[in-house]
Amino acid sequence: MSMKGIRVTDAQYGELVKKASPNSHIGADCARAFLVGGIICALGEGIIKLYLRVGADKELAGLLTSATLVFLAALLTGFGWYEKLGKYAGAGSLVPITGFANAIAAPAIEFKKEGFIFGVGAKMFVVAGPVIVYGTLASVVVGAIYFFVR
Image (tube, rainbow, N blue to C red; front, side, top):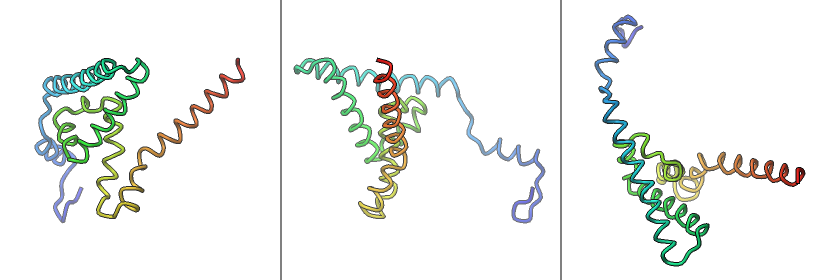
């Protein structure tokens, strides 16, 4: 391998990568992921209880909780805090609903300098577009199967 005129063998390159790579503390990483993921889930449970207490039925409370968690994750992404949480918690920040909201909001925010239409508006669906398309397609297929099997 040659880097700017310097010849480096594969073994030497492997050693350079090993020296430059941060040490992984898998136990601490797993503990942080478990803790943060658990806190996000506990927050969701607390929000459900709050909606139930103010009179929503169980189904509506679940829907409102999902919307609230998506809103909170998008808001934290907008302020740049969700990225910091992700760096700290790793996979713990990928609890499905908040991780998905972050994945939708992050590309839009990244391209905000291009304007609201061509930046935020267009890039918002980089991740959401395929999910919406395949989710819609899957619901049509399941609905058709249900209709014809019935």
